Structures are given as C-alpha cells and as structure tokens.
Image 1: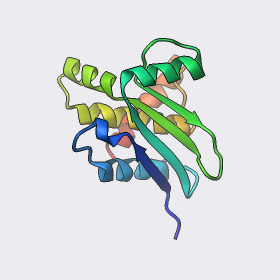
Image 2: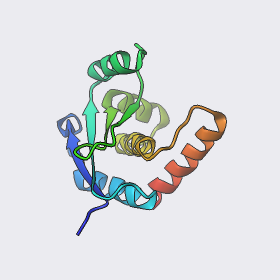
Image 3: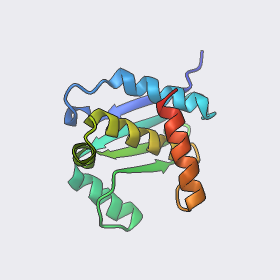
Length: 139
C-alpha cells in the first residue's frame, strides 16, 4: 500500500521534545489533501540561524535571515527539502506570544505547500498561500 508522503526529519535535536509523529501526520495529511505525488519523499530539516542563513545566501543569493526555504527536486529518490530556521521560530513565537511548536508547524506547512506548487510572490499568491496554510493547519 502506498503512503501519501515519506517524511524524513533531520535536526530534531535542536527542538527538545519535538513531536515528530505530529509533524509526519500533519505533513502527510497536507500532502494527501493537496494532491501531492504518492510515495514522494521529502526531508524536513531543522537548522540554527547561521547554517540556515548560509544556505539562503548560497542557493538563493540572499544573505539575510529567513524563516523557511523549500527546494523542490521532484526526483524519484527525493521530491524536495524544507529547511526550517529554529532560531527565527523561537524569536517570532516570543514576539507573538505563541508556542514555538506552532511557529515550527507553520514554517513546515509553508515550505511543504511550496513543494506542492504554491507560491507567494504576488499579493494574490500570498492570499492563496495564507488560505492554504490556514486550511492545512486545521485539517
């Protein structure tokens, strides 16, 4: 029987007591809900700010910090990667008065939606992305 998504989590040691099963379930449901390729494998990678920013500079040409990056490959062995900035999640959660886990879920969902084809470059795309994020987080 095929799975909607094979999720590999890397860097979970940066987030003590990370509920990996919750992330696997959440992103698997999103993948299925938004018609992701069956049996696709993605990596969800949690990074500290320094390494995350270095990747942002190296691959996207931007030396500033960001919250999440997604790299779609659509290969048979690896469909894509989602890189989550744990330090940004901690800062944003503190500023918003929300749990860090909620920020991490949002970033993970956002990156996964990018792998599924959602974009957020224009106001219209941003609106569609926000609607998809809300829907995904409340499945």
